[in-house]
Amino acid sequence: MANSTLTMSSETSKVLFGYNASYAAAWVGGILFSLSALLHLVQYFKNRAWFLYLMLFGTLLEVAGYWTRVISIKNPSNHSASSFTFLSSTLAPSFLAAGCYMAFGRIIYWVTPVSHRGFKKIWVPVRFVAFLFITFDMLSFFIQIIGVFVLIAHLTREDSTVSQRTKSLKMTYDILRIGFIMQIITFGFFMLIALRFMFVSKTWRYDWPNGASGSWRTLAWTVTGSAVLITGRSLYRCLEFTIHRGDNYLRKHEWTFYLFDCLLILIVLLAFNLVHPGAHLPHEFATIGHAYKKLGGVPAVKVAEDDQPTAGYSRVSLVPPPLAPLNNNAPPMNQTNNAMHFSDPWNNRPSPGADRY
Image 1 (cartoon, rainbow, N blue to C red):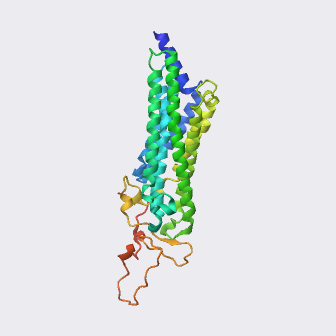
Image 2: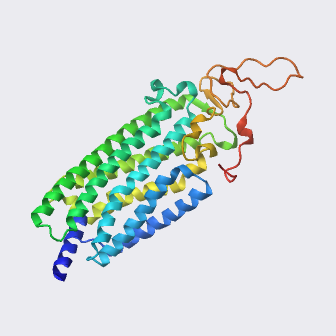
Image 3: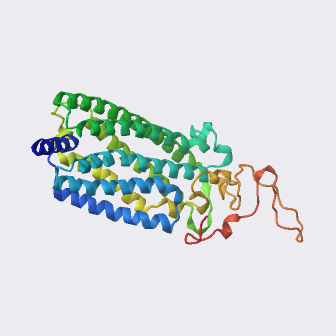
């Protein structure tokens, strides 16, 4: 009985990994991901970027997956560790993708003029950008999680025969492939919208205080580039589960996992360490939920063709404001009609270290 259990556990590890995994490489991966996750944890609370909870969870799930990989390699009979490693490496990037969508949804709502927030300019209504992509991402996530649990359930049954495990393996690969294909399509559509937004936004000019004029573009390109990397990783995993026979080169060689999965996801995490959304977005946009959509609009936007500075608008309008009356005793203009305020609420904007709500 003990020998059959050991054989079963070794077979489970072999099926989930597809090769004899390297103990040293798993240690290196665990250390690198742990360091990045620790920095993410510090940045999360320091910048009070509460909306990035899904990205933080995905980062911690990656860390847990690499340390259980170390355990499963050291102790092949521990099929629970092998199963969790497979689960985490398969599902964690979905949470990172959701974090990208949430960050980009806030960026696009922050900087897009009110008159440009419809379907015509961005091809997606601005207020639905994050919701749309997160919905499809979660749908692909649930498809993948069904495939993972079906595979683990069949492989950990000691009374299952080889033919039963082979049949369940084929069915699981089909389910996982559908999930990854849906994820790739979602990423492709997202990158189309992101590139469209980056193109049309070049016609807007920003005169924000504190040198923030180029900050959002750096963050937006970081999010878009991260989405490209996660798409590459999803494509790799899709190809990995395409061939059912044992001649799938991607599943038989460990270096492909570290190059097309581990390295790509690590670059994504490091990119967000360097350009953290919480350090670039206004504090009103770093909260959980959709309260930021109730704000007046973006500050200090003007059309590139207009050479007159318009810094000071809390709501955007492509129509210049009326002239102020020639009365020295008149109060400062604060025109509430036409959704325009000729005062600069961002002059009193708290510093990045100030308390956020």
